[in-house]
Image (cartoon, rainbow, N blue to C red; front, side):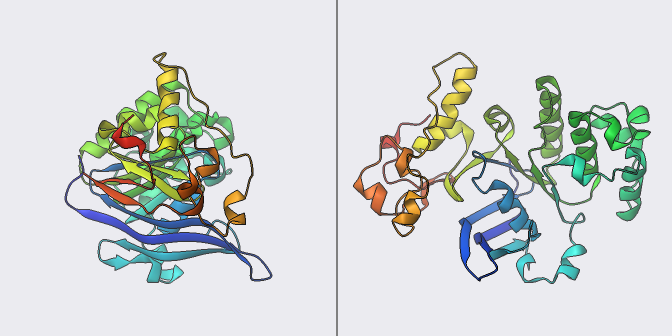
Length: 321
């Protein structure tokens, strides 16, 4: 359960891409969120929803040329979005850190894993055994520490990279697809490991994933994104009301053999919302519940109580999934 110590806050955060001619396109729109110590927020959604861009905006690292951030990000009372890059560099790793999606690109190819972990601990003045850090994530610390990244499998590289993230003194951890290359048994061990760190109560985690089961087992809150916007933010125990959220949850039930999965229908006309001047619900072209109001009016993100937020004109008459 999340504590009362508010560590991270974002207000109306947005991400856009500006091309060489000065034309901009919104990629993430109006995201507001909070993270408290001891809390795990999972961000769920299909590829292209803007999840990774949101993580980059929170830590203020543009992933590519032409990317612009809007809105404000606060670590406690300090506005990160107002700091220079030089100042931000003193915060990265010490107060807030991001584990990027591709561990193979994040690890130095010419340094052994143990040497990289040792250098990180020295940089942040962390008193920890390299072998113990690797053992904690499920690797053979002595053997893995002596290997280069190319000598590890994709899942083992992710575990080594996770060990580095957990070794950082940062109290806010942003993890982008931390288990995507892992088998189910290894994923389960990582869930247990992250849960132990969560229960220690001094860190907050935001985890980006496509794995619905991962979210439901670990998250205090699940924030679901679709086409660059939040469509729902809820506690798993309270259920979900948005049609898109419910379809994602059907996937989980289908894997458990409890129901037949309903595939998420792709829009018949890509860019249809843009053709309407950006109005309307982004999910309207795919939603079986959509009506004229959905196609013409963008639903605001409403507070339904108990921290449950939803952007839907017709949230299924209170029927939760």
